[in-house]
Structures are given as structure tokens and as C-alpha cells.
Length: 245
Image (cartoon, rainbow, N blue to C red; front, side, top):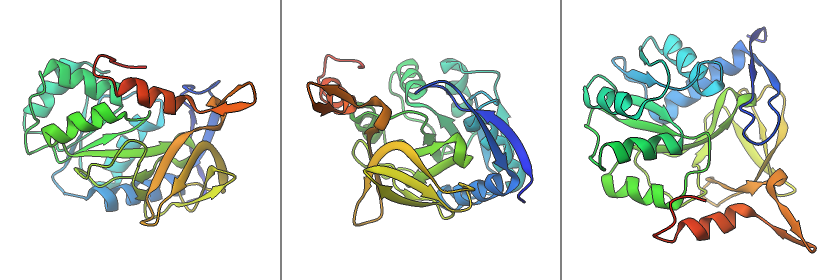
């Protein structure tokens, strides 16, 4: 289980991409933790439109391989193709980043998804309140997740269709332990391999849910005042005429 299974590059969305070594143990416990949170149905089919050279796409392959379930693989993201696949009745789960879901909803003119889609795993970037409100209006089975390459994908995830406010990513998965160290989130447990402190700032509430409150490397020092840009973005995007910030 401790043997190397894969070397993946981080996404580079918050800095220079770096290689991360993942063990079979991390991939296995990640798959098990995901199944415990999202459920495991033997006839599941997971739509994959994410790049397979990053952990979001690869984790779909490893999960479904261990679950013995089906993958519907698409060669990249196309809003129309994903929308058609979801409408086909053959897809029960899909992994998306917020921008992808927004484009799909625009293509569909906000038409709801069929009941055969039981979970939309939404991560890779912060999910803003306007998109969460939109999902709630449409009663989409969204499961907001927080994860990273170093943990073989998910660390914490909300229950599908349980709508929290912006920043809440639910409780840690079964094989993840999260604590707070100097306002930053620390991850340990089987999915992490070695314990490490993330660049994500956050807190854990009394119910055990994790709240992401920005990143250490994003904080701006303006005249001695520390400013979290995610708070500014949240205010801007709350305005009805602001699409994104």
C-alpha cells in the first residue's frame, strides 16, 4: 500500500505547479472516503470531463476501478456535450469546477437535471454564493468539496443537496483529519500520507464542518492592514450586475 502509485503535478492555479507523489494507500483511502460520503451504487456511472493528468480526473478512474462501476469518459469539457450526457439518464455522478457548472446552466437556460444525476461533486475552486443560490433554486444535488493533489483529491465534502453558505465545504471525509494551526488548515490521516499544513486559511465549527476563509499566499498587506481578497470578491459578486470577480 505504501508503494508509489503516481506522480501528479499540482494545478498551478495558485503558484508554480509542483510534482506530488501519491501512494496506493492514499488513492485507496480517498476512494473509500468518497464512497462513504457520496454513496456507492453498483450501477453508478461517473461522467469524467476533467483532465486525467490532474487529480480531479485521475481520482474518478481510481474510484470507479475500485468500486467496480462505470466511467463515461469525454475528451475534454464541452457544456453542450456534458449537458446532453446528463440528460441521457445514463449518468449518476459528475465532477465539475464552478465555472464548468455555470456554463452548463447557461447552456441549459437553468433547466434542472434529471433525477438520475444523484451527485455533482463541485470543487477545484471556491464556489461563490450566487452559484450556490442558483443550485438551491434548481434543487441540484451539489456536493461542494475541498481537496488537493497532495491528498489524492477530496478532504472534506458536503452531503449532496445540502446547501450551505459560501466557504463551507462540509465535514472531513472518513480517512481525513483536519485541524487549525495558526489560522491555516492542517491535514493528516491516511489520505495525506504525512501530515502537512496547507496554504488554506479556515476554521472548524462546532458541528465539525470546515470553512475555507482564503489562502495565506493570497493575503494582501496594504499599509499594514491584512486584506483577504476573497472577502472583497464575495461582496462584489453579491451585486446582481456583477458576473464574476
